[in-house]
Image 1 (tube, rainbow, N blue to C red):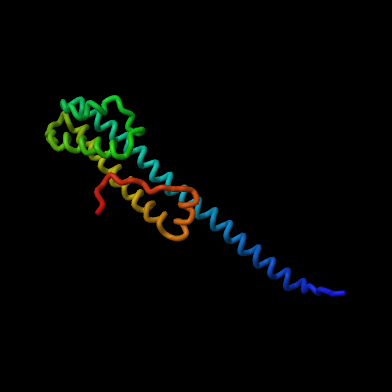
Image 2: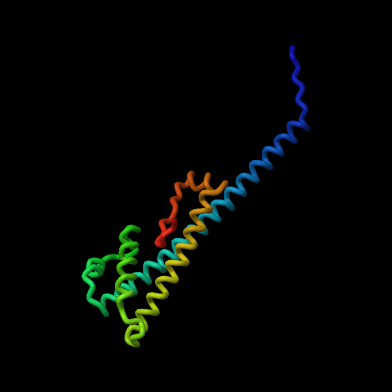
Amino acid sequence: MIIISVNWPIFLEIGLIVLFILAIVVVSTILLVRTLRKNFKEVYKYQSKLDIELRKTMNLITKRTSNSDLKKFENAIVKDLPHEEKKALLGLVEQVYSEIDKDDPELAYVVETYERLQEMRRIRDGKAIIFNHQITMFPFNIYSRIFKIKKWDLFTHQE
């Protein structure tokens, strides 16, 4: 008859170490996912603000000028447009804005709204660059692959 002797204190210590490591993994996972979610929502918030400013600026510019290219976006819902169309719309707004007289007192609100649009674009792209960089670094890259988190497209030209 074979007698197996179990050294219970060692078994208990190994079990506690495994449980401790498992607890660290669970807590770090929760914190990492929470950080990713928070940063994603921050970029999303500024994306929404950018969409609103883009719509406002476009409406103001189309009322003051007669640009046929902007007319096709007149009834479009800016937040539902794909990124490339938003980028094209932003380019059109910039082109038409460069043609208006910025010193005209009647266009002061257009100038102010356009400047807010550019500020939102810069802030949003800055947050998106930080988020995009974050999801490429370890350990965030593992969680971004697991949860299929995609990079944000940028409105500025980055080389």
